Length: 167
Image (cartoon, rainbow, N blue to C red; front, side):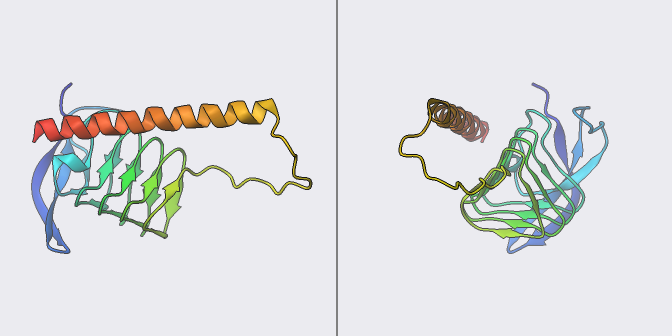
């Protein structure tokens, strides 16, 4: 697959790290060849697959990774071992770091996330009566969610191994 971005000469410093602005080298999703992106430290921070992108003055560094169709925009900051993927959207002045994972359709705005798994799913509604046994459909839904999570984790580790090989 053709690389979708390259580094420009424009750089910023963040917490002892030099991050460089990216520019699109081909069309993908809503991005057109020549569009400027945000700042990343290394190619390991932003996948060349799918439609993920770092926009504006957003910054991604350390071992953080953006992939899938995720977007990091505005003045958002993603660092540490954080992961932003699927259709996740991190924007404005949000900070995602540590071991936080932002995925699914999560939208993180002006928040600080340091740990946990943030999917953007709606919070469950309170149950009036607690059933003694979960219904079969609930069990099947949980099994499917576990299967989906396992597939996403496998994809993540596959991407991580590919990135290691590129280094």
